[in-house]
Amino acid sequence: MQLSSYEDLRSRLLSHSITCEEVIRFYLERIDHHREDNIYITVFHDAALERAKALDRKLQEGGTPGRLFGMPMAIKDNIAIKGGRLTCASKILENYESVYDATVVQRLAEEDAVFLGKTNMDEFAMGSSNENSAFGNVPNPFDKNRVPGGSSGGSAAAVAAGLAMVALGSDTGGSVRQPAGFCDIVGLKPTYGRISRFGLVAFASSFDQIGVLARNCDDASLVLGVMAGKDGRDATSSLHDVPDYGSEMANVSVEGLRIGVPKSFFPETLNADVACIVKGKLQELRDRGAELVDITLPESDYAIAAYYILVTAEASSNLARFDGARYGYRSKHSEDLSAMYVNSRTEGFGREVKRRIMLGTYVLSAGYYDTYYKKAQQVRRVFQDRYREALEKVDVIAGPTSPYPPFGIGDKTGDPLEMYLADVFTVPASIVGMPAISVPVGLDSLNLPVGMHLICNFFEEGKLLGIARLMQRSL
Image (cartoon, helix red, strand yellow):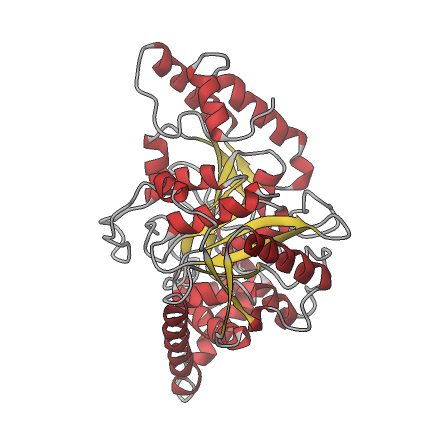
């Protein structure tokens, strides 16, 4: 079954040349065939088929199809679906079932999307390679000896391998964009507050944002338009109007487009193939009428330092709720209440999660709060001011998504600091809260994907998607 886009699928569904049930059976059979790739933690076989049959009946009875009628979707396993497991890829929540739907799930369902299952991820979204899951790692569809990126590696791999048409991920410091770059697909992180976080298990609340992974920008914009908007259950969701992203994308032209290119995004240590491909794409856009503008931004290394102080501090607070007392894993080797708390968390959390809880507790402790946490917040403000200033002069800021192509499984697990640097180009957009996207721009000498990373000003997702679509269509 060849489906180039949701537009293609929708036209076939509405013309009755294919049924929702046939489409969903096709995807479920592919998922079963690829079970060894560990992409899905939970598959909704029966529920997805029942949903598809109900949609077919709706169409036959003359009902109005929703904007996402029959779209086969995958959901990262830190987003709540009522009655489904919500594991966050952690032993501590291995058997937990959600008692409610996340706002994004509710809105997607109202527009007739079909959920295939919950995808694998780095535990509690902490990682850059999908190697921190309690359920095992996910291989990259391009090379099964390499990682798909993280933490939304399962969602990215699902789309890249044809096991879902579109997937949801969560992005704290690059966890949608970096795996999109590693898997040759589009990965969008909207403006902070553009999409409700209600029903997203929190890692770092002032950074987390639900994002979209898709094969093309049109599908991503469609899903974004359904999910975006104020939610009374999330005080951080924005009142900003939700525009017609399709129209905004159509209004973007390469003629006169001002692309900011920071020198700091192209250090000498950047992989040679990545540098060549990204610079080549920028030169191509200049040849087509765009203007490349040299801009100066704070060094991304400072963003990484501030980011890991702030997110570990927030994580240590957010993960305090997992204590074995109310829900989730409870240790059986405890003589008293205190030991039950300690043993449940020790046995339930993985190594990376415990590392970040300890770091966060440290930077928030007496005597270190001002030295680390307060200073990191000041750095965050500097980045916000500098990026605002830059985007008053240019339409978009461009650079590589990752400093290197997908790396081998196990290559960086021994050095956490080296692993953290995989997000060096994606973290700044998360620090400032601006929308950003990774779009495929080519393959390196080993036929591994390379992504271009684009950042626009607050709530300019339509323009951002339009620019990304220009790049993708020129391939």
